[in-house]
Image 1: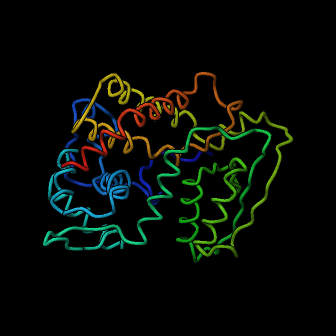
Image 2 (image 1 turned 90 degrees about the vertical axis):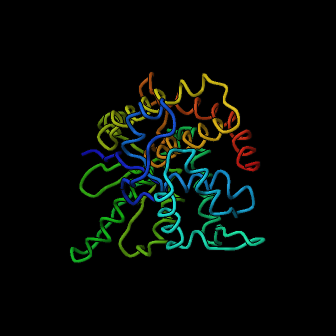
Length: 297
């Protein structure tokens, strides 16, 4: 049995499509994961994490509308996304010098920092010698919603399903697992083990049973197809903002889908390696001019 990889978002709570997204550049319109699956709610989270947080945590509502419009999102969709963020206690209204604006809440700041840490540090594969963490759980049938939530959380933490309710991930995922279980309050349902694989099936074959690596490779190739022409340009100003924000938008799913398996267990032509290098190149080239554009507009 394989673990599905078709999901997008910071929260890992499933995929939904929002109205109001038209794509921002011709290359985006050609991308299989752009206009058809755009999520203004997720895109505005990227704007908050990449720009609002480092620039003081506050912006006029009109600026949100302007920036999102430059990313191809219309005003009604932007205002709807902002309203949902207020409902989730991630943004709150605040006037400054008579200007209506929104600021990040105390709840939002650490969430965005944690998300950025995961997005921008996702590149180095796990070490095979470090071993694995295994998870088994038993949740009563009458609490199926909890079971579904835990399975979703495990998938988004990079765990693969071996079968019969047994999940595995590289051992370095253990701290994130413990934190997630404690936050859910599911300690009474879950057992975890740290283990070394000793046989008998080839470990590379076992990994392919637990994770849908073919589908993940397809997603990486889609990212490369979109990002390669972006990297060949020399964007500044508004275009740097658009390209950098959409680079984050397209990339941020991978740290939640890719368990960063040891290199020995992946094909020699694994597309995750050039994709990670290309994202790092885009960040190095575009982050500062994009931030300066947002600061100056």
